[in-house]
Amino acid sequence: MKSIRELYRIGTGPSSSHTMGPRKAAEQFLARHPEAKSFEVTLYGSLAATGKGHMTDVAILDVLQPHAPVEIVWKPHVFFPFHPNGMTFKAFDGNGKKTDEWTVFSIGGGALAEEGHPQGSTPDIYEMNTMSRILYWCEHTGRSYWEYVEQCEGKEIWDYLAEVWETMKAAILRGLDAEGVLPGPLNLRRKASAYYIKAKGFKDSLRSRGLVFAYALAVSEENASGGKIVTAPTCGACGVVPAVLYHLQKTREFSDARILRALATAGLVGNIVKHNASISGAEAGCQAEVGVACSMAAAAASQLFGGSPAQIEYAAEMGLEHHLGMTCDPVCGLVQIPCIERNAYAAARALDANTYSAFTDGHHRVSFDRVVEVMKETGHDLPSLYKETSEGGLAKDYHPMAIDN
Image (cartoon, rainbow, N blue to C red):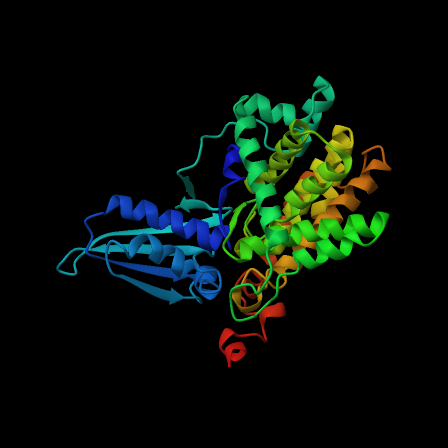
């Protein structure tokens, strides 16, 4: 498995696969051909189907257009076998002759792959890449998941996770303070600040749940506005982990050091899914994004509350298991409906998974690794119209032009 730096990427929304990945690809192609007199970029499958709502074209044009004219070609019904987020870059000289062509895939979380091989990523640094093996290691060494992360990543990982945590907290605070309407034709009003104020008026459990909702909404709304966030594991699911950890730190006074260890454990959980299945909504549906985020947050919460390695694994398993089959059907191709609400619900569900696990001894029938395997199979079986194409499900009856008119 790769470093969790590959999972926790600091960047701008609204989509890691549709915005961050294409921007990175455009930067790499421009670096190869600074002399090009024009470019052509063809977007395929999910990138083309929801690219305008996800600002894919804007991300590419921002990089290439200052240097040379760019033509964007949209082919939403052409899917490559390797991954639905395909794109082809072409460079031309002054005579209009093609000088190079590059097909690359945005595979989720801002990562790229070419012909099945990851591009520009760190080397494999984790020898164990299944939860069962790591759980066995924890139980037989007396160590925890975060200690395995430190062993593989080195102590410098804590400096990076500190930056991740500061970015997450800043996104929450900006989101709680912001008001108004989110970009796009849906004219969706921001809700985080209102939820935060209303939650303060309740007592005990209702206040707690309302605040968790508010924190998740704050980050997700920042993402939808193109703000600075952290993929956890993606932009579309970036509100879940910060909401849970921020709420627990505020209410239980956990130190930053303990929060960073929880982030390490959450990152390890997400890394296992990324390595063995997918974190791409275009490839496996929203179960791969919000479902994985819930699993990560549940594991982090369990660790903070003193869960055993088995209880942490169980919390992570429940967080993902109960999102199996969730479709990715963003209305108008925007990371807003149902994405933002799903972040809030998943944050609450992560805390519930921790509570349920804490009542047990951690032993259960269906392992986390088995759920990851089933998620991959389920994602493969889902029709493409339910995987970030905005052609089915909740998105089927909504079109940007119709709303604008």
